[in-house]
Each structure stands twice: as structure tokens, then as C-alpha cells.
Amino acid sequence: MVTLNSDMGESFGIHTFGNDDRLVGLVDTVNVACGFHAGDPVGIHETVAKALAGGVTVGAHPGLPDLVGFGRREMKLFPDEAADIVRYQVGALVAFLKAEGGALDHIKAHGSLYGMSSRDPELAEAIATVAAEYEVPIFGIADSEHEKAAQNLGVPFVAEFYVDLGYRA
Image (tube, rainbow, N blue to C red; front, side):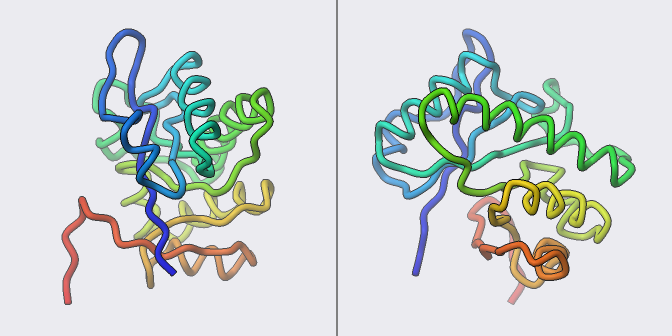
């Protein structure tokens, strides 16, 4: 089975990015920016409402605390910091989901947090720990630390082909 997902809500204040209104009708699930790399409370709420009205599921798209770099600059994190960064952002999204009568579907890290955790078992485990707390799957790279951490903690894992990444054979 193939599930199409798209990152959405990656705007901030009056600055909007992407084409969320059109994409919501083309995908099965969305990954909503939760405020650290992009997204703000109004934008998160609007994105959740649009997604649920469009009949698609909603997952968290937590990133590094890096608005200026759009979460694409690596930083050194202790595993407990990484877990708290993810937990904080997921909690914000869950509040808006609850307000709109929705439920969290999954967690998919954003940008450098995604890449860092695909290689670092401790960071991957930090994200998987939060997914376990919410009893949702992790979206990540097949055969990476994402998948290993999910398996180790009994968290469902959804392997994805991510069009923005370069893959080897």
C-alpha cells in the first residue's frame, strides 16, 4: 500500500509557503509543522482544520529550534533534549487536534532532525520514545536508525521514499 504524505503549515505569521489548500486534496496524510522550524499557533490551527475538513489524517512534523535556518541546520543535542523538543511540539499539535475533534496519526521529524536521527541511534530513540507515549507510528527512512529505534521500542514504523533526498541503489 502506498500512502502519500506532505509537509504542511510551514508558514509563519503573514508569510505563507507551499500550496497546502491544493495539496490537502491529493494526499492521504499531512505532516504539520509544529512551531520550531516553521508554523505558528494560528497556522497550526488552520492547517489542522483544513486537513480534517479534507478527510486526511494529521501527523506532527517537529523540527529543530531554528526558524532562521528553517530547521535545516544541524545542532548538537543530548537525547533528552531531543525528546523534549519533539514532545513539546507534538503536544502543541495535539492541543489543536483535540480542539478540532481530531487525533494524532504519526510523527515525522523535519529537516536536519530527520537526517540526524536517521544516523544517530540515541536521537532516533528519543523520537521513538515520544511516539510510544502517543501510541503513534514514526515515518522515516527504511533500514535506518529511525526503523531500528521504532523496532526496539515496539513503535509502528512507516518506511517512506522521500522525494527531496538522494538515494543510493
